[in-house]
Length: 253
Image (cartoon, rainbow, N blue to C red; front, side):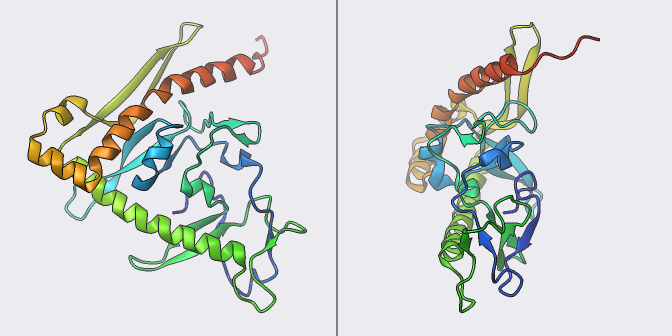
């Protein structure tokens, strides 16, 4: 998936155009994600992501029947284009979602069945001297490109599985709008909304057969990982206040 706030100049990897290209891998400077305040995570990532990030759900569009399509996201910031998981150039969590971990590579969909491996041609690590070559001397994909292709292919398959699980949440009407309010030290209000959360009371009210079905399918595991992750909103608020305190004061009028 191409993420506009991350992949600023996504282009398909081309054997002829990029045959001699080298990349400064692995990525060390994550300031490229400075404006990324949330990111898709796959169902298989929930257990790890819940230890580090708040996990919510968002509506991403509508399916062929006109029903909302739902996707899970890890939240990085409390404001638009704010990423609190950046400490200078360092990522301040041990686990990084796969869609970010694969940077500068991403998937560009050609049609419903085919995709192309793309790279962010605007990244500062493109063309690095002494970097890892995209292709070997014979013009075949190098190790970095082969690894990226396999990981992106796996992520795409997991994304499809995740859509199916989220569809079940939607069909059972287990999601509700989320609102997070906080009062800042200067008395101003901070409100975070636009996300969806699982309604705990509706989960508790599920009949035994449905609860068992959700357990077997993995949906129940996603729900409880989501519940565990919500405590990280307090951490984000603390980091937000730290960043506000460190910001230079505005000049007097």
